[in-house]
Length: 172
Image 1 (tube, rainbow, N blue to C red):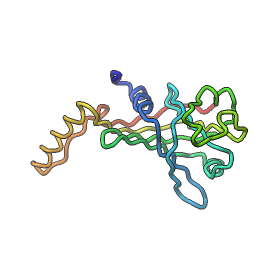
Image 2 (image 1 turned 180 degrees about the vertical axis):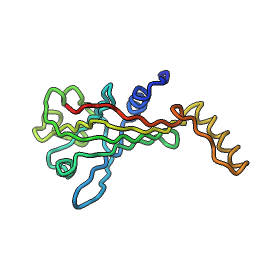
Image 3 (image 1 turned 60 degrees about the horizontal axis):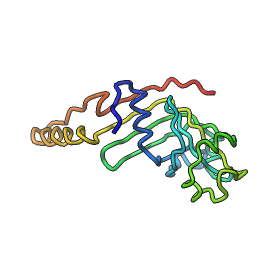
C-alpha cells in the first residue's frame, strides 16, 4: 500500500488511481441527471480523468449540451470520492493508444483504431472524499460504536478520513 500524503490533491489522485470504474454523471435538457458506470482510462497528476466513449453514445450529446459532469467512486463501504469538472470530447489517436487497455475491447470491439472512438477528458475542478479503509476503518468502527452508546455522532478527522479540495486546473 502506498503511503498517504497530507497534500489534498495528492490524496485525491491516490484515491482516484485505486478505482477502475466510476459513475459518470451528465446532464441534458431531457434528463436532469444521467449516470452510468465507466472504466477509468487514466488519471493525471492534477486529478484530471480520462474515459473512452463512442461518437454515437448519448453522453456525447449530453456533454455537448452541458460540459459539467460529476464523477463518483465507491469502494464497498470504505472509500468514497466525488469529483466535479468539465468534460471535453477529444479524438486523438496517440492519446487513445497511450490510455488504451485491452479490457476496453469488451465495450469497443473495433479496438483503439475505431474511427468512432472518442476520449472524454474531465478537467477536474473540485473533489471530496471519505476514506475509512484499513486502520482508519477499524478506528472509525470504535468511534461509531462509542458515539452510538453515548447518543452522539462520531467525530471525523478532517483531511484524514474526510477532505474537500478545489483543484486549480486551467482548462487546455
